Amino acid sequence: MEFGLAEGGFGGLLIATVLIAGMYLAMVLGMAELSAALPAAGGGYTFARRALGPWGGFATGTAVLIEYAIAPAAIATFIGAYVESLNLFGITDGWWVYLAVYALFIGIHLAGAGEALKVMCAITVIALIGLVVFAVAAWGRFDLGNLTDIPVDTGAAGASEFLPFGAFGVWAAIPFAIWFFLAVEGVPLAAEEAREPEKNVPKGIIAAMLVLLVTGGSVLVLSTGAIGAQALSTSGNPLVEALGSGGAATAVNYIGLAGLVASFFSIVYAYSRQTFALSRAGYLPTSLSVTNSRKAPVWALIVPGVIGFGLSLTGEGAMLLNMAVFGAAVSYVLMMVSHIVLRVREPGMRRPYRTPGGVVTTGFALVIACVSVVATFLVDPVAAGWTFAAFCAFMLYFALYSRHRLVAASPDEEFAILARAEKELE
Image 1 (spheres, rainbow, N blue to C red):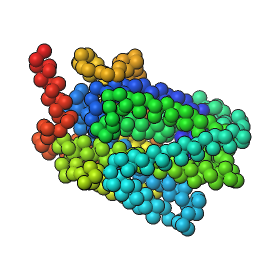
Image 2 (image 1 turned 180 degrees about the vertical axis):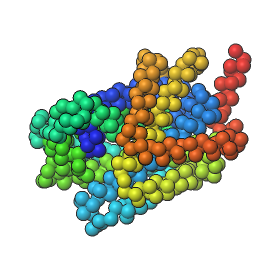
Image 3 (image 1 turned 135 degrees about the horizontal axis):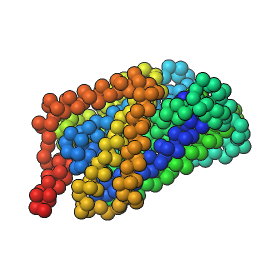
C-alpha cells in the first residue's frame, strides 16, 4: 500500500483500487464457473488448456507460476522488515528471516495438505482479528485531511489535492492495488483436495473475494486517514505506524506479522499445486510431480522455494511485487479469454455454476487486466522486462522440448481428449 501511495497518492491509489476490485470481482465470478466445470489442481492452466490448447494452457500456467514463485519472495522481505521493527531475536539482517520462513513453511507443507491447511486457517484467523483491532484503533485517530496531505506535483497533468501526481498516478498505482487481492485466484488449485469441488470451490473463491473487498478497503482508508498519505508513503510498517505507540500498535505489529505469514503460507501452497499440475502433464519435468508418503509434492514445493529465496536476497520488495503482478496480470488476461472462448465454443458444456452477466462480466475483467499488464511496465520497466524475458524462456522450453512429451493420462489432457471426442461425435 505504501508503494501505491508513493506512486499515485491517496486519490490515485483509491481509483486504481476501485478499478482493480471490479476486475477481480468479475474475474472471480468467471473463475467460479470454470472451477465448477473443470475441477482440477491446475486451476487457470486447466481452464486455458481446454479453451486455448496446449500453448495457451502452458502460457497461462507459466504466468501463474511466475506470480506464485515471486510473490512469496516479496512477502519474505516485508516479513523481514516487521521482524526487524519488532527487534525479534536481535535480528538486524533480513536474510535470516527469509531463510527461516521458507524452510519452516515449506517443511509444514511437506507434512501434508491437511496439516498445512489447518495451520493456514489458524494463522488467517489471527490475522483477521488483528485487522479488527487495527480498524477500531485507527478509527479513533482518523482525520479526513490526512488523506490528501501529499504535496501536489504542479507539473503533472490533472494534478490536484486528490490526485497529487495527476492522472498518471492512477496508472502507476495499479500494480500496487492488485496487491490487495493478489492470489485469490489460487483457490481453484485446491479442487482435487476439496470435498464436492463443484460446489465448494466456487463458494470459496467468491467468499474469499468478498472478505478481501472489506479488509482491503478498510486498511487503505483507515491507515491513510490515521497517519497521513505522506508519512505512510515512506513507511516500512504501515499498520503499526498508523497507530503510533501503545498497546494497540504493539498488538497489531505482531498480528500484522501473522497476516504476512498467512499470505506467504497460502501462496507456497498455490505454487506447489501449479508446479505439480504442469509437471504431471509433462509441461515441466515430471520429477517435479513426485509426492511423498503424505501426498505432498516434494520438489514442487522445494524448487520454486529455492528460486524465491534467491530472489528475496535482493531485498527489493517493490521490484519483486511488480514482477509478481506482471505474471498475475498476464494470467488474468488468458483466463478471461478462456472463459469467453468456452462460452462461445462450448455452450453446452456442463456448468454447475454460471457467471452472472456471462462474457460481459469477464470481458470487463479482460480489459482491466490488459491495462494492468501495461501498468507494470510504466512503474518498473526493468523488472517487467526481466519477467517478460523469463516468460519467453519458458515458452521457448515448451516449443523446443516439453510439447513433445505431454502425458496423455493426466487429468488436464484427458479433459481435452474428451472434449475433442465429444466435438467429433457432434
